[in-house]
Image (cartoon, rainbow, N blue to C red):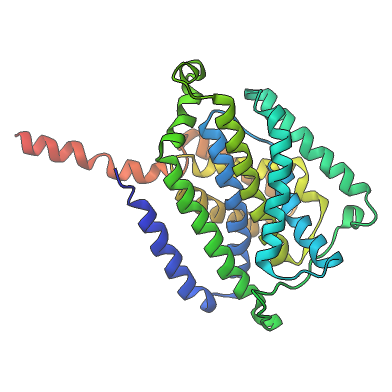
Length: 321
């Protein structure tokens, strides 16, 4: 069946591209950061649909950010597309190497191994004086295929680029989830042995999903670094990866659009809560997560199903009467 929800994502993208220049600067920045987060969570959802959770996506989020920073600082590259491509290639290479080991593990072992590798990168970057140690360093102002906008409009261009990348990836992920290989992930989660008997290598499926998730995370890290103009080792810290898992639980794994919605809600709530209570904002987010788990165990997107579900049985009863 044709998934018409991708049309909704495309329409939303067009609307945001049109109204983007007229939005307040702070809202564009929040939108850019939330969409960068959403890119990471899209990859995380691919893994979660296969029954595994990664607490180390901050590793590739950090690689994407540092690739943009290093390429601009030491190699003089400022083109946004080139910076994103460098981060994606670097993350794919790292994921291809680590995935050989990680694809063998499941459940808590997979989660802890991914977090361990992310913390190793955090430790290395924190000790590296050339890369700014714990303070990090600034990222060069981005250009776009040779075009260098004025400083005041760079954020608007980055917001438009982030919209295109995030919604493009969301549409691709949504179509993938409705494909044969997308459903293979759910089959692995339910019964991996049966999948193997059907002739599909579960380990290979997870291996490829892990690489795709790494590339998506690197894109988010690169976009966030260019938007903030700074990158630091805290992007590889385990709490950053925990925020990605938080967003995945908040939105649910039912739809790619849920990830985009949950990421924006998370970043908006975090911004306001931190402003009102800078020392207890984690407590407030914890309460939100607890409420979602209790009342919406399948995430915010399940609200749409609850609205649509009662209508179908009612119409059928009336027709049969």
